[in-house]
Image 1 (spheres, rainbow, N blue to C red):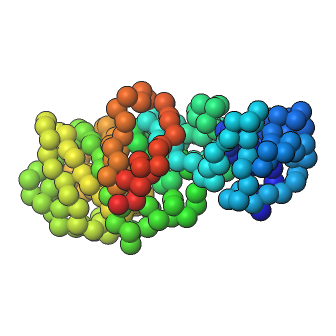
Image 2: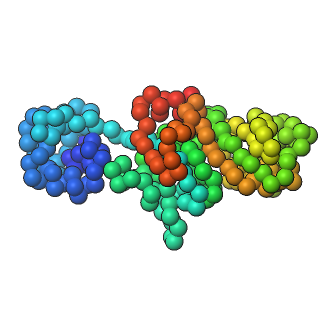
Amino acid sequence: MERLDKIISKCMNISRSDASKKIRSGEIEVDSETKKDPSEKFDENMSVFSSGGIVLSYNKFIYIMMNKPEGVISASEGKDETTVIDILPEKIKRNGLFPAGRLDRNTTGFCLITDDGMFAHEILSPKRHVEKEYIFETDNPISKENLEKIRKGISTGGSVFRPCEINETGVRTYDIILKEGKYHEIKKMAHFAGAEVIKLKRIRIGSLFLDENLKPGDARILKREEVLKIRN
Ligand code: URA
């Protein structure tokens, strides 16, 4: 059972206070009956919610793909810093959103933002083996020997990194597929090989690629079939 204002804010992607206003002004029906009390509780899976006769679909959780720009932190709150939540377009903002996993301040690309804690936990758990693919550029080249070592798994900077896929794609550019999410993992791996990462972009989570139509800072709500692609 959930309060009506909370349900309507999720259905319409509006704030709780805007949802309350709509309810009080008689714009919302539950099972075809106008309801004016925002605190009244309903079973969101059993009742039909509508506005002016048009049925609203209830999304308990939302999943957002952002093309994270540089200089923004992937956290829900930052003291003096701008977060990925701060730059979300107003029309898709709602309470409880957080980034699932951390990208460093200067890392760009696919940042998944959701309010579904279980889902976030699942895709971040090393046990689930959800792949994350990145492309990156370094200041110095990484030798073939070091690429092979990284591929087989290394212990460096106080962390143990499991075997992964890493390939050279051009001059000092690489593609890497990881299944665990450790702090500064790619930077530490490059460091191990005597190189510094100068550009890093996440391009895939699970089997869902970053939508290249999203400009840095843009975000959009994922469709159901896209969310399913993240999991497998
Ligand atoms: N590895 C890093 O070093 N930084 C990131 O942001 C992601 C992976």
